[in-house]
Image (cartoon, rainbow over the protein chains, first blue to last red):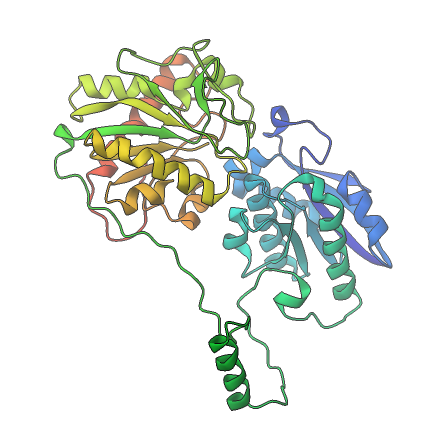
Length: 346
Length: 77
């Protein structure tokens, strides 16, 4: 009987929601949450232990969290390490990728996780960790779990793992030698023909798209610069007049701060569903630092403050929607001759 | 969002806690914050300490905007 260990976050570990996102890692004998389902799907393999760690703890105390988990694992023997699935939960995905890579480096065992293509963890870890292409939300749990277990079963059985496109994981950038009976000239002609006829074809050498933005030139004169504030932390007036969604946002708002010295709790709050809102509801300046900006304005550190701050919710929000919302905000910044921006993310 | 603004030629500084995510997404100027739920003031500390921290990090963000950089930069705070 082979052995597997499963890593999950506080939510799937049934410790609670955002109120427990700061919990340090813990090791539990047997199976909890998704680990139970893995146990049913894995062949000739026992899930011996479940590790649970708060997403914020892993995000904010990464070294400490990783070193504690590696210490838990040291005395144990296991044949595979599984994390997630993490869907499009950004912190969870990054946590799964972080711990999978660390476990693979230390113990040399195969590691697998699952994320949605929009999860930032994919780009960060796909070269080092097998990440299955997963659903965007937790209702896809069943199929994502099955996919992970399916690949895990293949690995545990010593079967050869095929290329990313057929196995369903994100390309790792590794190249493997494959023998094909058709020579390059024939393949080339087929591809050319398909292209001319507007038929689908797949290049044998896919050039990865890089979306690097050229660095905008630094401000020449901060003392006279006009600055605007933005946040993805979901800070809004308490009645949320623009009905910005708590997750997967498609709406944004602009809120007048020209007459305010600071954002008061009870007047502003956060609608972001991706973290415990208690601190930001009590003092919204911990996300949108209007008070500090007004003080630094008085001190003459910068020239002037754009009269509005812009807000949306960054959790589960697709890059496409984020880009579209920003395209809508941009003309307002330009019209008011904003020289530079500060974006605060949670 | 940061990229759309920067692409328009407006310098922007990203204040965030998950630095590796910001780097992967492609922010060019990054100033670290202290946590996800309260980036700029830990409620377990005194109001005065929170204020000092917030003022310090926001000042660092403003200074980052007038700093010439040639590559993606995480400013130390």
